Length: 82
Image 1 (cartoon, helix red, strand yellow):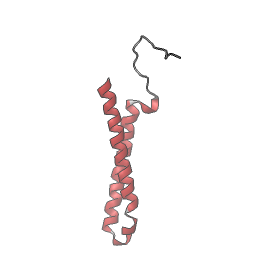
Image 2 (image 1 turned 180 degrees about the vertical axis):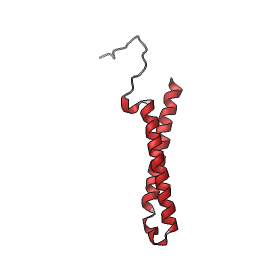
Image 3 (image 1 turned 135 degrees about the vertical axis):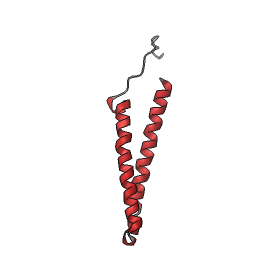
Image 4 (image 1 turned 30 degrees about the vertical axis):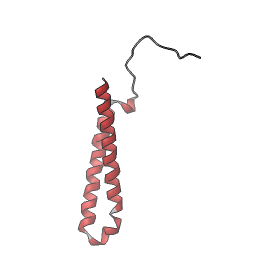
């Protein structure tokens, strides 16, 4: 069975949750979480009794930073292809 080849070149339609506006909003909100997690790391490092709980704000900071980078690269490739 042959693939249906369309002679028209169309721009890809992105979903609302993958639009540029929502990606920038996601970057902003997750960056706020990243700053909050860094504040948690500073609190844990300042209080000796909380050192065993350092993994939680550290892991939260890592995940939020990773998500900011992933969404930024998604936007960069989208703008590069346009």
